Image 1: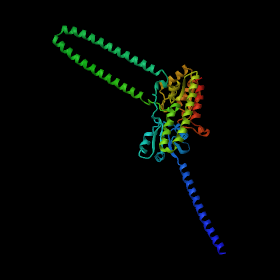
Image 2: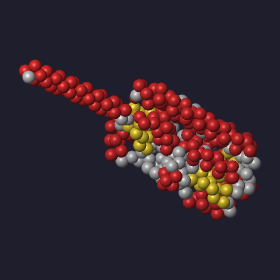
Image 3: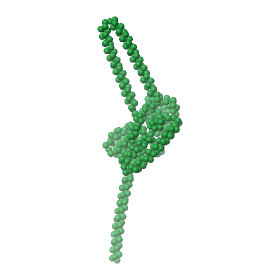
Image 4: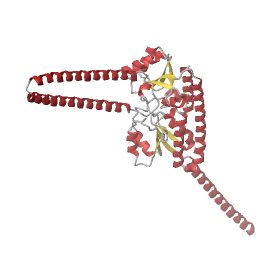
Length: 401
């Protein structure tokens, strides 16, 4: 009995020991699982300004990013202003990704606010060669001719004035010569010198005033010509969008280098899709009967550079840059002369002046998507960059038939 009791006691101790070891192993496994879950759930907080950047960041970053687009659904990136709360959120995030090229008016103030915080500031358009915006061609083709006519008229008037002035001087000299012969030579000579000095002084003053006036007009024209002289709408060009996506990929790798392979694989897929979209765009342009379209605001200049499709923008680079009365008349004349049958409106912008043009021309309405921001319908339909650009291709196919 004593032997059996001792054996039972030993077995009991061993069982307790093994149970304790097993519990410790389970605890260690549970702890390792928790650490792994924590590591896998780590995400980068990214803030973007326009929808294409949000979409590319989500597609490349995948499960490792949480992307917030600052410009709300239905808003306009040209005129949007962030709240103080949004600026604080950006300062607490990992990266702020903006288009640049003068699109977002609030960017400088936001960067100044967060520059001392631990947040990456990324201009996605860096490395893209921007095109110049031609205000005259965007509003039609007659404004330059009108200015040329006015300039020619001014030159004719100026030449007439100079010719008349020379005749007056000639008559004055002949008359003065006759008087000089009849009167005392010294007296005549003094009068001639006095008149010559006064007349020369008046001419100098007149020439100086004209020169100053010309300089002012030149400076005014120069300043006007450089208003919004670079087009920021680079994301509408699929090839330029590859650069946008690549800059986003580089940022994600810098912030989370252990996921470089994951980000690179996703970027390569985005790049492949953008190249395919470029081919679709080019095929549509090659098949089109027309090469010019009338649109509510002049945000589509990169399609002309890439595919040869010319825009006539009713408003300027920003929808707030409405045309003058003269420009509006030129647009209507151009649309009638070239038999433009459609006015292309946009998903988040409906300027009244575009509706005026539509009524005057008797054109049908179609819709382009500028992709700066989604509208509620886009969200409900689950649209992304590629689906919206494909719809733009179909809209242009109709407008250019």
